Length: 156
Image (cartoon, rainbow, N blue to C red; front, side):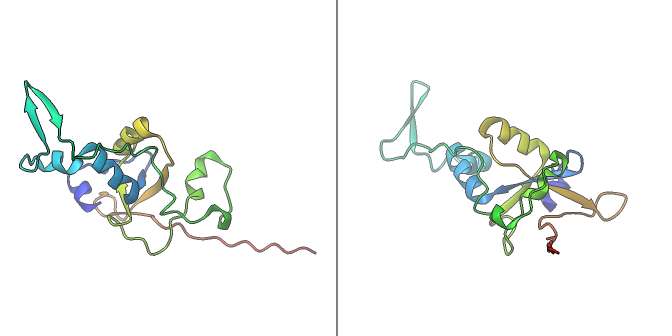
């Protein structure tokens, strides 16, 4: 998140960013060959070019489509949650499991990145607010783990 802030990539939409499971993101990176494209390395190519066309070697597995953005591996089961039916508070319906580590289990992405991925793959949107600690917005944090509210019903 800090690197994104420095480069101005962590843009928000109404003060919100999005969380993506690293499990799904890893599948996406393999599918798109993201690491090779980003590092611009061509030394480990498993393809050859003939007449300008790229041909994959037979021993290289075809990339597997990652499917919709799944988040179940990082979410608390919904049976433990009180569901808020108000669409503006819908983000409260997705509580992350405690003990998860940013950039290992999940990553925080800007609204622009989320919109790009969601328009292609669809999936479950985990929104979180960005909280500014000062007026300059240079010290910001994301409320990743929502505060749990327990309700006890008393029947008289």
